Amino acid sequence: MKVPLLDLNAQYQTIKPEIETAISNVLAHQRFIMGPEVAELEKKIAAYCNVKHAIACASGSDALLLSLMACGVGHGDAVITTPYTFFATAGAIARLGATAIFADIDPKTYNIDPNQIEDALIGKGIYGSRVPGSGSRIKAVIPVHLYGQSADMEPIMEIAKRRNLIVIEDAAQAIGAEYKGKRVGSIGHFGCFSFFPSKNLGCFGDGGIITTNSDEYADKLSILRVHGSKPKYYHKIVGLNSRLDTIQAAVVGVKLKYLDKWSLTRKANADWYNDALTGAGLTDRYLITPYEGCSGRHIYNQYVIRAKDRDGLMIHLKKKGIGTEVYYPVPLHLQECFANLGYKVGDLPHSEAAAKETIALPIYPELTDEQKQYVVDTIKEFYQ
Ligand SMILES: *Cc1c(COP(=O)(O)O)cnc(C)c1O
Image (cartoon, rainbow, N blue to C red; front, side):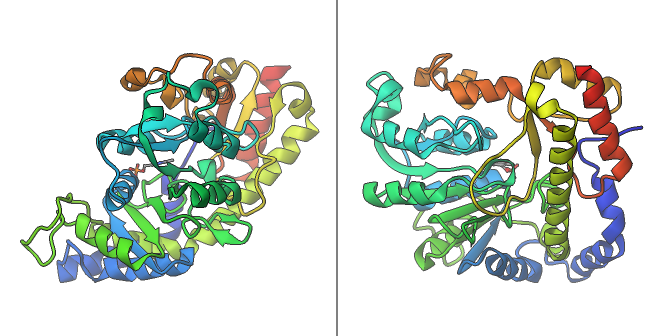
């Protein structure tokens, strides 16, 4: 039996005629840049995330970059974020000449620990003079809702308010996730989403969108994504070319109708895994199951467990035809390109441990019962 980590074709087959109609509509009108499907999608996503505005752009990475640009982050500024995330989160900060300050995660949820944000702000522990960012003006914080589960937003918003920080939610993996009844992307000043194909709501290439309740930020973002031009060919600011293709908007528009169903099925798969792995006695002996996390809706973009001899397990599963992945093998504070920031091994121990111990299992909605059972049996086999 083969169980890939993700089977995009299985999903495509269930919605093929609708997708093809949506794409051929775009081919018929030929408005490939900022066609009507883009504005329609922005309306739908704003409603879905329960925010006033949504501004589509070329990727989740650009969503982060544009949000930082909209609040004027640049040289001499610092932004606090988690080291246990996809590179783009910190890449956006560095690209603007600002400094990323990494705050360690809560080992239960893998999301940024609000207490560590506080430490970074007051220069406690490793955040003394040694970390370069500590000399800069800390302007914003980027919590990441990793794997589809919201970060602990209440204390983060409290700290941000007290310290006058902008909060940019990296919700690239978490569209539709909720924290205490609020949709992610509606809690901070900005919410950044990605339509990368492997996200719960993916397009057929790159794409992204930014949510905000601020009229001013929404206006700024919509100008920044077209080279800072308003009206056309008149530039008060320098922006970039970062629009969502009309064809991609059409694809996402179709898929959005199914998103809740897909996310619920992912959750059901996760619950099933949790039971099956607990029942096998694996959780006590070898594995720590994920997330005793925040109260709210988890959309399971990834189902991640901690595993004893993680690399050995991964090789075993691969031999048996099961796809897995490590998100992420190197925490960002130890990436070569950030060596200048001065972090060393041991500085952020929870992120470093997670990078060594975690493994993502197949969780996509179209998984069959037989496939899930096969994954669990193969894990059991390894540990016996
Ligand atoms: C996918 C992802 C991004 C970047 O999205 P792209 O659309 O691939 O540019 C940013 N942050 C996180 C946490 C992600 O998972």
